[in-house]
Image 1 (cartoon, protein in one colour):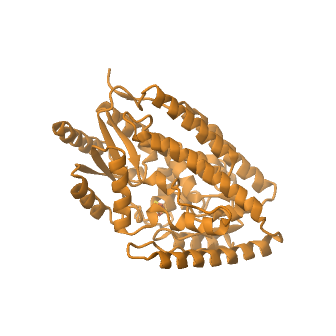
Image 2 (cartoon, rainbow, N blue to C red):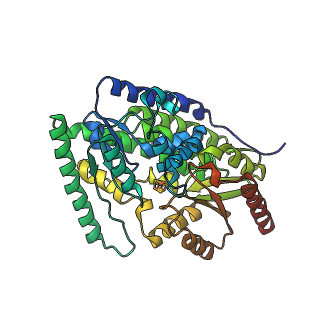
Image 3 (cartoon, helix red, strand yellow):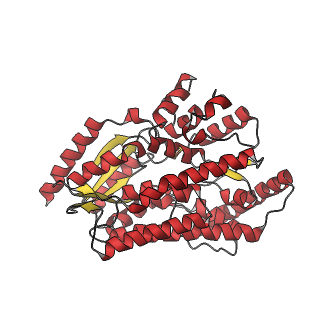
Length: 414
Ligand code: SF4
């Protein structure tokens, strides 16, 4: 029998959790709660602690991609003049809002994004600020911006500490604005409680991921990509902690039974670079599985699950450090070192460097990263084309042809 991916039981719980989030979001909106849209990296914790309903347009794009809706939404954005070169995550969001009458919203995935009362953006990648500025004008709502310096390779600890202090000062201004807007004071105990829950979900999720260092890996990185949504949508809640505890238990059970992510032998362990391709996940994982190959680690999940030594007694500092010290926010050398540690630690046989065509951030420096990793590790690499939300940038024939050739190389290496 040909090797197959072994499905996780916890994947079945995803649709219910995703639907719960959207239902709560829309119920909050209808009940008159203030809705804030947040960029993927931003100090969302203060909004949640102040009882805003929070929506993430980038997270919505990931869900639309996984559900197979994002291609149509990207094309909608193009019909009103946006370039197909614009990041597909942004086109997905624009396609779901611009020119969509309320009566049509029901037809969008999850009823679409409810109109925001406020926008909070941390411009973590090129181009994203423009979208948020455009949304501020489109909906005529305030836009709060929190800068994020990049942790370049040459920055000293003292300079990093100054960047953190700048971030805390900016965050205090944002909080003061929110307090004036709502007429309520931020409850710092509540903020710390929510952040502790977010960190706990992170910690448990990461413990599950770390089990993939074992051979065979008890789950694949595509399982990790797929199960990212509860963390993203239920941030700072016990719901997320419980989900990842159950997921970790299931992964630990596999580990105890020496059961890998494949039904069949795990022959090759792969590193996957860049973003997931949600709309093709199942086909890609089965393609790898047919060769006994498993992507067992990727840098992307660490963007949401890394564990700097955060001081929870100082929640503002922790919130700033959480986005600033993120592995995706480092200089080239920092990113190469980070990936190399993963490649060494997870006993990798080959590098699959996915080029997410319209992503300006994860593609930046990717050729240099590939070259450096090949040189430092001696591992073979293959570059495959794809895109997070726009399926027109992905070709089955091209992907399969490249993977076939790559697997021959791995087989020859023995
Ligand atoms: S990180 Fe990439 S995919 Fe995400 S919003 Fe920025 S450009 Fe788009």
